[in-house]
Image (cartoon, helix red, strand yellow):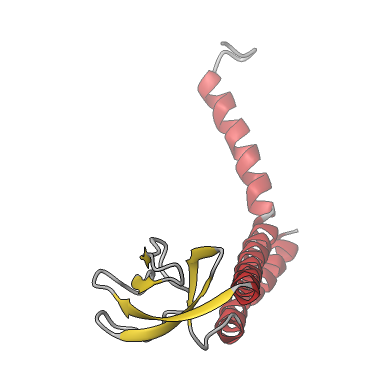
Length: 158
């Protein structure tokens, strides 16, 4: 494809420059959008935890469980016997596992209708409110000043 001037490379650079100029102009909004997205994700995760707790509470059973080897910060795996006598090892791990170590014996609460939906007994989504709120505050402690700074710089450049 040729242009009226015959220089495709020059026209491509000019078009890319126009696109980058528009993106650069919108950087403050992009930064605020990232902050809003992270906030929304945190709130949805907390809402999911409350929903999960409600489902466990509706058909709750409590039993002893053992924390298995291979557990880590992101996923703690336990083994327990449900009220039907079946051995359960939820592959996705358990909710609210902070402070558990492999080999430890604990009590868990699970949903009788879905025994893979498990949480540490006595813990709930309420325990996650403070960390989620702290995470959101940290995001906005960075995003807020960055947005203001970028917006002022854009307004000065006119």
